[in-house]
Length: 364
Image (cartoon, rainbow, N blue to C red; front, top):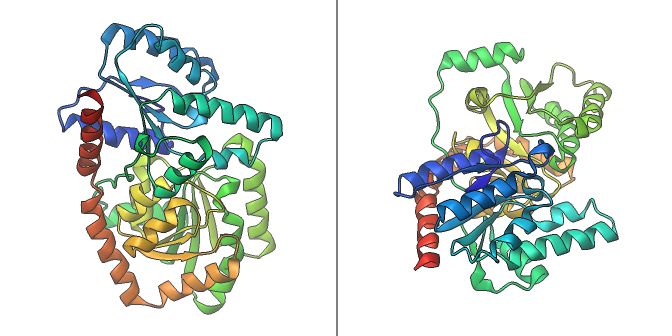
């Protein structure tokens, strides 16, 4: 298994940890290789170390948790180098993000190079796993891949950690939240998260409902510092001081208390493939969700009836959805109940069994 694990604050890392634990529970021996090109470019040559380990230990499966920012530019070379050595291991790739997420930021030339990069990767892989049907359809159309090569396995849902009243109170005190009702966004702060639309919606919510605060829980990387600055300027311009709180980077140990203390979660993304926060935190702690209708995220919210979906980039509709949910206790209870059922269906034990079955079909 090659991924970014262990890296705190990385969704793919958390995903890998849960999957490995589930696989071990299904009698799968896992050897872990770690790489994270975006954060640690000096470790790019780790791919040659992985090649050596594969040749030495001869595993049945080489499974890569793939995003371009994690795997970096030498990943195709790793796959190409396996061929001359007649490695019998089957290559499995979990594609966590759609190509279109990255192509939005590329010019014509770099877009062509990126398409070639991903084409090589997908052609040299025996099985591609994705989390949503939408992502599978994009792969089939864009890369002309055989439909049988791509399999949809949903994201797993974590087991909730017990959170005491004291822990929730400490979180409130740390961020000066008082006894207000918390509307929470959780995750890394990046432009694709659409937080400017959530902040713009909040004054409209406060006009109709008092005693609320918006918690933006997460930090921004140096490359997105300007975006964070823009958001904070919006808060000042809209006179939302004391109503909108930025926590900065949140340690994994503190996340359960923040989510547990919240009334509902808002995911106002502009574009996304799938949201790990939806599975790891919102569903895990049975928090009703308001999500924008982008990527596979909205399909999960709609299909399982665990929240409301709204169009992206629409503060008016977003504000209305927040008020609708806050004012309808029966709907809140229904969404929480449905999340409870979904937690059982998408438990990591069940998700690991799906992976185990996929591995078995490949090696027999």
